Amino acid sequence: MSSQSAITFWGLSIADLTALLIMGLTLITTVANILLWLSTRQTVQLLVGQVQHQIKSTYTDAKHQLVEAHRDIFFGILNNPTLLEHFARTNGLDPKEWELEKVSAFLINQVMISFLRFQTGIINRTHFEGFKRDARDVFLYSTVRSHWEKVRLLHSEEFRLFVETEILLPDPVPTANS
Image (cartoon, rainbow, N blue to C red; front, side):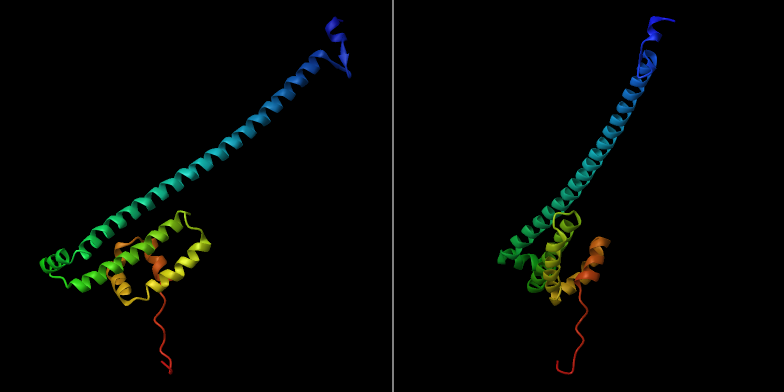
């Protein structure tokens, strides 16, 4: 018998102990790699979610900047009586009606921006519920409702559905006392 096979530890030869040690280290390495993979996968999913949120936020901000630019242009016209009169006359508009139409558009666009911010998670549900109450008040104005009927198809399907199912309240039913 060789001297190597004669040495035993807990009844196992050196070769058997070496094999067990290699198997144990392989098991530890495999478990560590699985845990590392799970951790990396979770990190990548988190990063993907953050990038998607950033894209949505950037879209919302871009939409907001467009709305603000339009509002600035129209306020520039509305706040310059000479320009407003000339603009209205040239385009065959009644200045007072055009003014109401633009204010109604501003209010609808403000509701849209807040809706987009809720969709992207910038506004939480609790604050959004309070906003919806304010938006319902805005849509009680006849000029806003009238303008909505003209522009509703220009808005996204999600926003139209939101306005028409959560914001617009049915006309009150007249009672004997009203």
